[in-house]
Length: 326
Image 1 (cartoon, rainbow, N blue to C red):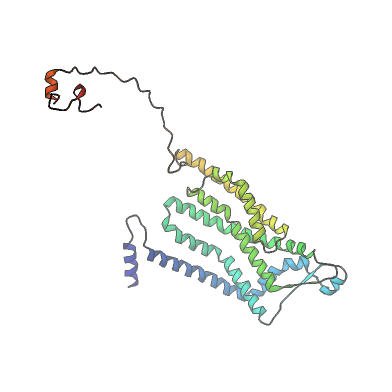
Image 2 (image 1 turned 90 degrees about the vertical axis):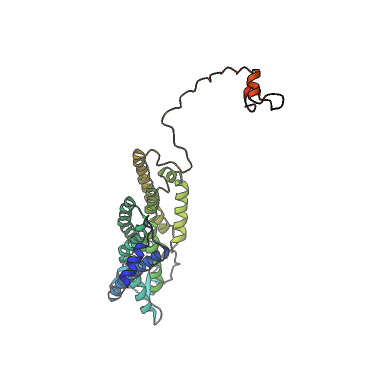
């Protein structure tokens, strides 16, 4: 019955290859289940090695702002700024394990759920668009991982900058669950922000935006990226904001260069590719000059013709033998 239902669903496609809404929802459900299953499998594996992963996340911060062999109270008394990562509560270790494992599952399983996202969008694309989509998925995973790794590198320096504002003689306690929340937000924000240039290139290859228009938006885009970096970064310090905004601006101009190159390539194969739907295409040749109109001699009215045309005493008058003045 399941095979017959699938065959029937395939036969319900129209001649253009479009599926009905029920098939789209069924396909979306299957793709979501596969993505969630992949994240769940990686999360379960990460639970086994959760202590090693947590140590990997805390190590740069401990090296940057940790008190080392000294207690934070003794270090504070000596005027040193340091911090200790602590766990508060009985249930906190279990909650921390879930956070670490789930974050690891989302990051490590990103190639799978990105591929499932492409698989859902692929049936609505043309053959050349599918080729581009594969390239976008292949570039999206490294960009996301590069953003996540940059967040991992920036976090120790951001923690050091923030803890320098501590008054003399005061110690710092960093709850591990709050620290992991900051790490998770930084990884997601940096990873997704690095996908912005890829989205612009996707819109350009789809014919939605041109490289010239993107280049004209550079002032607004730089301001928008800066505001986004200020709002999205959980720490709020200028170092983290600059570390997020500067690479995105560079990637934006790199995306603009790719879009301009693609527009030039497209204009060579199709000169009218850059025209809007309501924009007229230029004429190949100038129109030829039309000469003066030839004058025709006016017909001579005569009695016999007027009578035949109804121009007698009882009929309507027809000037020059025509029905009206035209």
